[in-house]
Image 1 (tube, one colour):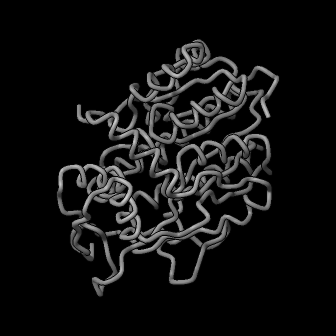
Image 2 (image 1 turned 180 degrees about the horizontal axis):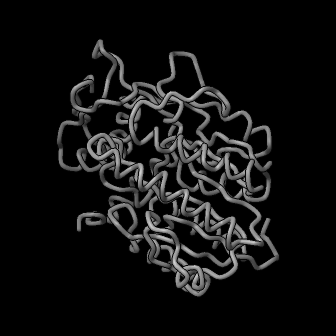
Length: 336
């Protein structure tokens, strides 16, 4: 259902992979004006937004891009450019686990200090704010034992600096909700994929290596016989979950956003190879040395959001077919 009221949504990291998918979905399904607050580093890429605007040039008129690095408080100049904001969707973050292991303080600054600066802006400047949505990760729960899916309020067990900083930022959001009455919610999102994802991520890696007839390394358990598993959710479904929560939520709550089906990475790679008509060459590798802080299995329970009325619309094969088609049609994307 389209909204009839003209409002403004501030999306931090709107030029990022998930951020741009949310920008596109909100432009398509609402009348909202969109502001993307981004520092446009390796994660944020304006090419993503340019692609979105090519679908509908009129969307460009409803979208503003404002440069700012959230490690610094928002300046008077930036606050003036933002104007009145009704929704804040906070996605901007350092998210590369390996980099967080090498540079943990960088992630504290990006994910904890950056979130604090945005929260301070929200309580001081956003009188008409209806929602502050903090986009967190399933990794805050740590590894899931076989048969276990974590619910929203289960105990956290962050096992790498990235996950720890996301958990810390969640606690800041909760504190600001309790202390200042900020209408904040938190999402835990699992393994989004789709067009325009950074080439360092698993699915783009598999597509690229299959194109080049290269061997794919797949993380395994200690026995080296079973591959790690995740719940992969298509980016458009993630965007729809965010839109759903903008209108259907309880302030102070947390919501898991995940696919219905868990898939191990070897099965996933085989499915991609089958769709592409390629032979899969792979090796299973226990990542204890190559990637410390890696967890074999993540899994969260999506029942809460499903019972509220949100449903996954794109199954894994459909999403992979669309994703593969996009990468094959855009072979040089992300190379520069």
